Amino acid sequence: MNPDEAQEYALDASRIHTLLRRYFPFYCVLAALATFGYALYDSYQIDGDAVAYMDIADNLRSHHWAGIINGYWHPMYPAFLSMGHMLFGATLATELRAYYMVNFGIFLLGMLAVVCFTDALAASQQASKSASQQASYLLDRTMLRYLGVALVVIASQRELSLGKIRPDALLQAFLLMAIAALLRYLVHGNTRYAAWMGLALGCAYLSKSFAFVFALLCILVMAVFSRLWLKQEIKKILPAVLIALTCFVIVAGPYVTALSIQRGRFDFGDSGALNYAWYVGGTEKMHLQPSQTGQFGSSEVNLKHPEKVLLHAPQILSYAAMPYGTYPDWFDTSYWNDQIKPHFRLRDDLPRFARNCVLIVRYLFNHPEALILLALLFVFGARIHRQGRIAFWLVPLLLGLAIWGIYGLVNTEERYVTVAYFTLLLTVFSALRVPDEQSETDSSAERTNRTNFRDTASVMVVLLALLATGESLRTVFEDRRQLSIRGYPGGWYSPNMVHVADGLQSMGVHAGDHVACIGPIACLNDPYWARLAGVRILTEIYDPATPVAPFLAGLHNREQVLDIVRGQGAKVMVGDFGNDRVRDSDPAFRNWQQLGDTTYYALPLN
Image (cartoon, rainbow, N blue to C red; front, top):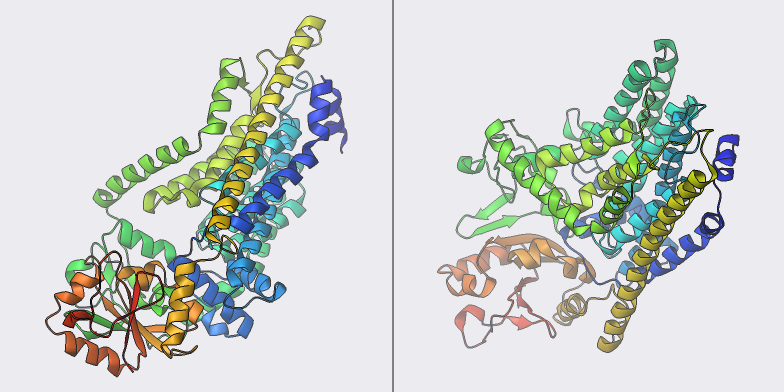
């Protein structure tokens, strides 16, 4: 503890505050134990994104490097999955259990990251104090820690669930560490924090390509704030900027280089451009073909290697050109959509931005706990601190708004903007001050009132943290009860997927075989059945809207369609028929076999 922090804890110390500070490690243990229950009992939530990440993790373990370089999904999270797979000795049947544990480890990393961020905010509090402006902040380092960990716990209950095989929690941890390092550099001026920031941003980029733009923005903010706000000389700023940029390039550079070589152009990731084309430009998202000019939207489309179309009505597609992935079309959608270049059009951007603003408001309504606490503190008299010349809270506020703004221009989902919410909200809490500034002429009654107000605020923060953890415990116990009733071995277990995989095996389908699929549910939304069976979906009959049974019943060229799919070497064709009843007496469904007690059916082909 440095002298400033020691002075902070000595000022206005009370018995309640001392106890709360002492019990913070126990709260962290409680939060970790409660969230560990999610790793055991959180429900199955796999989708096409998750299967793609698991496929990339397989390529990492098998050293298929070409299958790791991907313009849409980045390798850091698959590397974590791969390490978990090896650590727990997982098989296809048990890998989800291992991946849930990996997500729990990432949750612990997120706790550490938010503590780093709140500690950096506390250091900024100390740096902003003048000699006559002693401990006037409402929440100190420990209370900010409680609040930060509580927000991570709440996020794990909702958009960053441990049952989701996605990199958003990992990205959030690295971004919080990077912003914490940036604040530390601005406070202390030590270049080791610039290096820490560059390394954290490099890891964030390897988690998601969004962090490439954000990394450059952080480095720019560091330079501009140091020059214009702190009045530092350029000769002092330039080494820090170069160190941060060098560390970022050391981590991110090899992947950018490999991806650029693979694409034949400079490329740091195509997810941003593709999502802009899809959600803003109106470009068709699935199975776009060079002849479909009416579905290009506002984008310039010169596809280098679109999916191979075997038949146009209905559309039958072959993915044999892609040697990797359970469902190759979504394993690397940037490969099939290479050379889609979106164009900015204000008339497209404004409606999309307005919709995303509505989604952000919905996000806030879905996370009301801390906002209610903030409102209560204002009602009780808390105010925003006037930091004068050294307003360090401007940096995280601007960066948080930038994250919301970037996603607001393209596509906003709750899991994307949680890190922005953390950054903005914790910064506002750190800037709260007691109603009256402290001075040497204060009476003992005024000092007592000030201490009591701080104690009240501290108790409210800890109560929020305990209620958040209690909600996790309640949910975990209920999930465990439901699993016990159903007889499932864990939350990761999906009887539907197991029955489908077992049913395919009983039909003579073996690992490594090629299969076909029909309908968006079996193909894109949840292809985990194919991964569990160890097969690859290389042929698809695509119909985006019609349920499978009515689609097949109305197919006038059914035999031609089946002959084409059969000619691709697929052993079976699998589809999810939902609630539609399938009768073998109906010519449209002759020889279709139900896969266990599920809504999935399979048609033997070869």
